[in-house]
Image 1 (cartoon, one colour):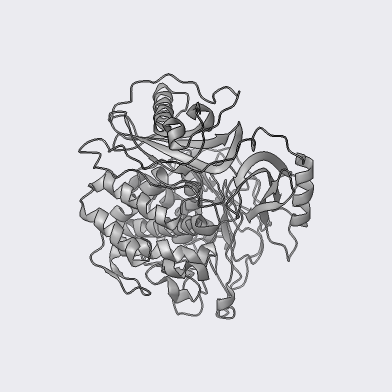
Image 2 (cartoon, rainbow, N blue to C red):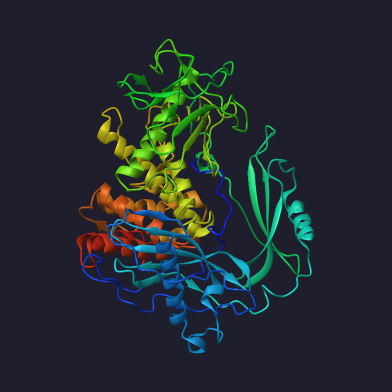
Length: 612
C-alpha cells in the first residue's frame, strides 16, 4: 500500500518522457562569484521559425538588487521582464546558428514562452520557460535560466531535441472531435459534467522517442462513483494524423494495497464513524487563539488556530497563516465539495464530550498548519505557490475509505476502514499529500516513469520533513523514517508502515537502488531510490543493495534545503534520477560551495543508491 495523490493539474508543467538533458555548467559558489557559462544547455533542437509574432517582446531591465524579497515575481513586472529577455537573448546566443544545430534565423522568443520568474534568498533569479514549436505547445518541455545576483545569466537547466518542421504548422487529418472519440473508447466510462472532456493541439514525444503532432485529451470521472469504480483523470495523446494512441497516463492515485502485501493487515475493533447532521455555515468571524488543549488522534495536545463565529461557536478556520488554513466536513460523500464547517462550542477540540467526527478534523487541521509552518520556517516559502496560497482540507471523504489524496486544489482524507488503516490524517501523510501541490507549482514532475518516482519521493521527503519539524515543537510527535506508520494497520502492534526511507526494500515492494529500476518502475516502488538517497544525505548509513556507506549525514535541515532548492530551481517535468542527482549537486553548490562537505555528501548519497 502506498500513499499517492489522485490528481495533478494538467499543464505544461507535466511531461511524458525523460528526454531533455537537465544539466547546467559546473558552478562556483554564488556567494563567491558568478557561475561559469558553459555547454550545460544542450543545443539539440531547431528553434521555431514561423510567421508568428514573438510570444514575448521585452526590454531588458536592470536586475533587482540581491536584497530584494525572495519569491515569485509577476511576469509583467520590470524585474521579471528584464530577466526573461536576458534569458531569451542568452539562449539565442547559445544556439550559435546552424553550426549548433539550429535552423538559421531561429528565434528564441518564438520557441519559448515564460512560465514563471522566481528570485531566491541568495539573490539569484530563475526563469522557467515552456517550449513551443511553430506556435504549438510542446507538452512538458522546459528550460530554466539562472541569473546570478548581478543579473547575468550564468547557466541553463534543460535541453531540447530536434522537432521536424511542420508538426506544428502542418494540417491535421483528424479533428479534435475525432481525437475525443478515440479517447472516449479508451476511457470506456462516463465523464463528469463538472469536468467536461477537452482536447488541445500539442506536440508530444511518444514512447517511441519520436515527436508527434497530437491532441492532448483529458477525461475525468471523480464524482458519483460506484462501489467498484476508481476516480480517474486520464490524459490521452492521440496522433493528429494516424489516430494512434501515442501516450496515456492517469493523474490520479490513491492509497493502494500492493499484491505483495495482501492479507498482511490485521483487523481491529474500531468501527466506522456515523455521519453527523451537517452544520449550517456561518459568517466568518475573528481569529481565536488559546493554549495547547486540542486533542489529536496522533499528535497529542496541540493548539489549533480557529475562528469564532457570530453565533459564538468556533470553526476550523485559521486566518493567521498566509491566505488561510481551513478544514471542512465532506459528509462522507465520494466527492468533497461545499463548505460545511466542523464546529465546537468552547474551542477545545477533540475532548471526550465532542462528536467523534471532530477527531480526524483536528489532526487534518494541525497537519496543514504544520505543513504551512514547515514551508515557511525551514524552506523559506510562503505556502505552496509562494504567495500564501490557502490550504484547504476535507475530512470524512467517502465511507470506509482507505485513502488520502491531493486533487490539485485541496486535501481529501478518508476515515480508513478500521482494519487496514485508521483515519489517514497523520502529520507525515498530510505533509506528503500537500507536497504534491508543491511539486505541481514548481518542477511539475510528470506522474509516470522516473519523474513519477521522483514526484512520489519528494512527497515522502517533505512529509517526513513536516513530521521532523513538528517533533521539534511537540514532544508528543515522534520523528522516524517511516511513512504513515501511525495510521497504517494500527491494531497489529508491529509499527509497520507504508514505506521505509531508511530501508525501502523492507516493504517487499519498493527498490532502493537504480540498478533494480527495470524490475520496479511503478512510481511508489521506484520512489525508494530517491527516498534512500535523501535518508543517507541527512542521516548517513548504508544502502542495503549496494552496501555503500555514507558516513555522517548533513542533517535534516540542510538536506531538506538542498532537495527543495533542486525541486524549485533545477528540475523540469521530465527530470530523471540522474538529472535529479545533478540538480541536487547544483543546489548544494549554490548553498554551501562547490568544494563543500555538503556537495560531496550529495554525490556520495546518490552514488550509494546507484545513480551516477
